[in-house]
Every structure is written in C-alpha cells, then in structure tokens.
Amino acid sequence: MSLKADLTSADLTEIRQSALGAADPLGVAADLAEAADAGNLADKDDAGYALALAAEIAESRSKLDAALRYAERAVEAYGTRDDPQAGAARALRARILFRTGRGDDAMADLEAVRPLLTQHPDAAAYVSAALAAGGRTRVAEEWLTDAVQAVLADRDQPSEPASAEDAGLLFFLLQQRHRTRHALGLPHDHHDNLADRLETRLANAAARPAEDLVFFPQAEFGKLLEKWPALSGAYGADWDEHRAHLETELVRQTAAGATGLALLPATVAGLTSFAGADGDPASAQTRTGFARQLAGRIPWPPERNEACWCGSGLKYKKCCLPRSRG
Image (tube, rainbow, N blue to C red; front, side):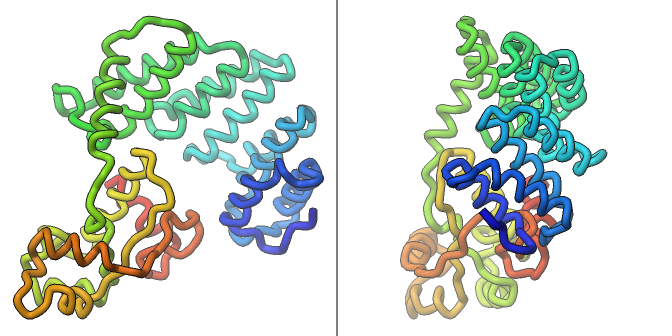
C-alpha cells in the first residue's frame, strides 16, 4: 500500500481503522515508518503517532521485533512530552516488552508513566492494558486504587461527586478500577459502589435536548445578544462562554456513549423567523423547536491539527479542544 504525501492526523486515524483489513498490513506499517522518517507528514508532531501506529500493526501480526523497533522510535519521537499520546506510546512499548519476556524493562516504562494516572483520563485504560498483557492485573488494581485515593484527596468538595461530569478524571479511574477488580473476581468495595452510582447517573442524564448543541458563529452571536440580551443565560454571556459550553456538552455526551455528534449552526434571522411575530425566542419551548428544525451540521470532533469547528481559523487543539477543561 502506497501512502499519500503529507499525511494528516485524520489520514493516520483512518489508516488506524482500516490497516488490519489491508492486503499487506505490515507493508502499511513500514510505509508509516518511512513517512515519519521522510517528514512526509502534514504536522511533524505526528511522527510519534505514525510510528506508534506502525508498532500496533506489527504487534497485531506478532512481529514483535519490528513492533518493538517502531515503538522505540515512537517514544523517541515524542521526546520529553508528558501528554496522553506520549504516555500511550510508552505503555505500548511496555506491552510489547512484556510479550518479548522483558518484564523488568516493561515495568520501568510503566513506572515512568504511572503519574499520568492522576493527570489524563486516557491513562487508566492504556496503563491497565499494558499491565494486563504482562500478567500484572493485580498491580493494575493497586495502582488504580492509589490513583483514585489521590484524586479523591485532592478534591475540594468533601462529598462524593454528584455526576460523572463532576467527577471528571476520577470517573475514568473508578470505571477502569471497577473493570479490573471484576476481572480479578474481587468483591465490591465502596469505590466500586461509587463507580456504579456515577454510571447510573450518567445513563440517566444522557439524553439532552437538541438546543444544547445549537451554535451561533461569532458574528451571529454578537447580533443575538444585541437583539435578545436575555438569551445570554441559555447560550452564554459571550462567544468564548458559548463555545466552552458547547465543547463541554459534546465531551459529556461522548462520555455517555453518544456517537456521530455534530453542532447545529444557527443564525439570528433563522431564530427570528421561527419564533414569529408573537413568539418568545428566550423560551425553552421556542429554542428546542428551533434546534430540531435546523438542517445544517458541523461534525464533531475534528482532528487535533485540523481547523477548529468554531470557524476561528485556529487548529482545534489550540482553540476549542481545551475549553472543556477550563
């Protein structure tokens, strides 16, 4: 398989989804490594991603020597970064090291990424998977328990989280710990019970009205509040707050299991027309009806290095992606 020039993050994600069904997946892995070597990537920061993907493909075909070479290069490409992608690359290398009988080296890698358990939601899954590959599921349970206790100790509120959204990172730790303890055949404890309660609350809160995803572009948003200041309560006091609300809601719906999410672009003229001469655009009934008849869609999420969904012209990772973490 010959890869195109200047691969984007979206291209790499597509390859990840299709490579194992390719006629020559190992050839795809080699091409990915060559693209990283040649700088044949739209964003040079994606070199680690391309090499980690090559390692995953080679590992899936039990070509562990090649997989380890690619994983080593992925870790090198990420350098000193401590973001989720870099941590996942080190956990991938650890998993392969376990499979080649180098358990001590694997554990050294995982000890280095263990602090990420209390920093990044993704870390609970990839650290646990690597430990399980090495037959260290009991260690995974111990690490996850320590991380849960550390995050609980750092919470400002003495009471338990009211929802999965309120729990944040803690929710992902609790869920992964719950699954790990189930695999070990351990009885429920108070952390498992909290995991169950949060999951139930998440399921109960999953359905939200379409109005929560109505998006007014910047010029339209300014006209909206100029015409109807009362709508600041529904859509945000300014455009930054409007975008932060939308990004947070999309992340919440994703955590609840929703797929195929999209924003609903709207205009002031459209809302005016829908409300009619006697309607109240500030009423929940009007807003919900307006949202349901919107035909346009902005698919979400974009790739990290693609243009942000809000139309700012910035990359997603530099614009709205961080807004849900604010």
